[in-house]
Image (tube, rainbow, N blue to C red; front, side, top):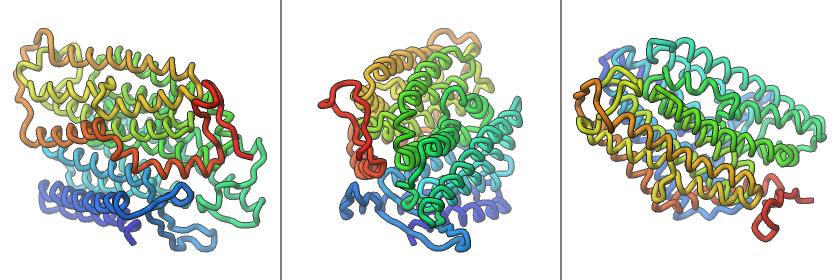
Length: 511
């Protein structure tokens, strides 16, 4: 019962924090932290068991499985499974939500109970998404996730365009969700026609006999849905608007968690379910990844709003994830998962810093900032470290992930790997330019703001410790994900190209 409780604890917690809001604004915050910390402790215990006791193999990389009938007439089950990748992403979700609650301690003063209800509900939906092994359950969690995110942006966002940003986010993701539903139903009926068995079970659907045309259309439905969520250029335009208007907790969840849903979907479903179609589209997808890396970095450099600048860096970093997934070899896949983890920490921390500065200065315009290091050196130091993480400084987690993606991509497509290295150069430019504009140079506005408080210092210290740990001891994460990724490549039936096959060799399907 551990897996259903991972989801149910957040559903129960969401009701508890809403009720706690009736007794004052402090109680929802305390209840949220207690639920999240207790939940994180349970996940870390599972992680230790994964490392010490459970011997996983590529043939069976699942740490835990759970399944009970849900809608028996349609053969829909409440099926959950946890492997190394899903464990890492649930831990990341829990960790970042703890930081989001702590970061919103002072800034959210209205409808506090309902605010934390939405945070808990987001966690329940994310846990369901990362653990679901029934495609119908996955889709239900996908749709449920939209509602609390919409409320976070629309009710607690910045005043200027929060309704516009919330509606735009909802339309983009709802439209992509409809494509996902059609693709899931199409795969369900194709499997029933081929085998006579109606099922939404992920494991049974792998290997479904499909014609080339059918596989292409179904794969495109899945790819389009996940591409919007990632987001992939050119369907990324909802992201900067949503980030610019969302409260700090909303931005942390969007950058650190919601984008990972798109990456997780690409990783979990595209190649295992549609190996030949995915292999055929891989060059195009890798090209879109390179485009996202370069485009996101260039546009980030041109922003005048601090939060929009950080938002566009996410587009660039998620380009590395797309590139690594469609390179589909062990190095690139390990790198993609590491980028997902490190990006969640570093970009989430940058959004917290941007929110703290906005609360002090009442502006996010870079032209009105400058010289803040003299008055807030601790904030400047934290921002500098996470900016260095964003540009891929060795010793921090982002560097490990992006380097592995480039090494893995080189084995498959040297041209794409070469072009993607521009991301390192461009990220150096926009990251250092951001620090220069905000914290150094003249202070034309005469800002004198309070430096980092004890609460903010604890948040930053924890985030710093994690991003440094990922950079210095990456095997903690790599070992956890390795068997899961080997299982995914085995399920796809595709043998990845390696150095012995020569640079540029494409992956070949097993007979």
